[in-house]
Image (cartoon, rainbow, N blue to C red; front, side):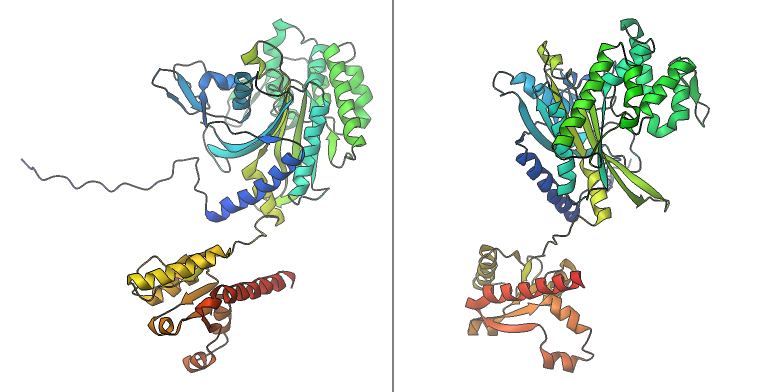
Length: 506
């Protein structure tokens, strides 16, 4: 019998599917972008709110499946009291729970914004992640569509604050009530037709994916995909299908408004929706937002199953090159609408609400395409090198480092194996450090330091051919009294900044 213990298996480092590690550059880009978004929201009078990553699963509403383990679409676990909790699917359901739980303390209308990660228990794919960041703004307790109009204006201002110029974006606005009127006008009103109405909504939501022809099949007898799988249709006749496709096919509201009003004539909800669209159009026009920025567009079909009134979408209209090398329109980077039923689930009374969500990762990709992100370059730290390892010397190096930091200069003292000095300069080069501070025994005895401009040194090293010339030139390195350390480093960093500015303008 072999009693020899098995060698433990080395653990394999692997990233879970659908998740990503974020590097320093990504994090700084997101911070730069969200700071600009936050500034616009604050100017509009919105205040920040933070809710936890977990909510009780029943608070997530429509994402609940009918199963023993509620993990369809969400990541769930059971608490020690056997209650199911799930990682939040979006930022809106947690807001609804927060408002309901604190309703007596909250001042209505309640205007808030939130930024944070949300989680989807779905199959990952290219550009489709299980964890991603959203940035939301919502107004709770405001029944008038002027609140929706303001959201659209804030979306437009946010995109411009991020450097997206007019003509490269449009905020498109529709209204769920108008579609309800269309459905009622074609005979799908009443509780007995609720299932058929839901099938129509789901078919319309496939417009971007399948086009009018595919949607027509889903509205009618059904559609067979390329694999042969068949999706049963909503069972509408051709006249009904034509009216639904007319509604979602409207691209010029001014030209189609009369016919649309005729289509929903006699339906109270449809007429109310048309009035609301016209009211939003008048409000944004009065505030100076023309149709080049905010456009009434009944072809917007996002989330019609979820929203109860106006819906709006922020779309970027410029071309980008996709992974196949094709020019395509960038498309949607966020949107939202009125969801008067969500808070009411907790309250047993009507609580109007409207808001929108920005997809942070997608918008960041757009800004990178436009060259609008990362312009504020992060300067790597000045490196204080270590020549001696005794307590006194280390204390002096640390003191220099703290003096630079106290002066607002990013700095670090080398923390690796200091006995191989060449490795310290290699570290500085790989890190992109702009300046190195060097003080050996001789310099310490004289009370001076060597200050090496690493950026200028790298540039000049290509112009000097032999070691003798290098030693003679002593390029980009000078000796300075310890007392002048901060001033000299500032001087070098300023010269480097000027070089970068000239290079950018060249």
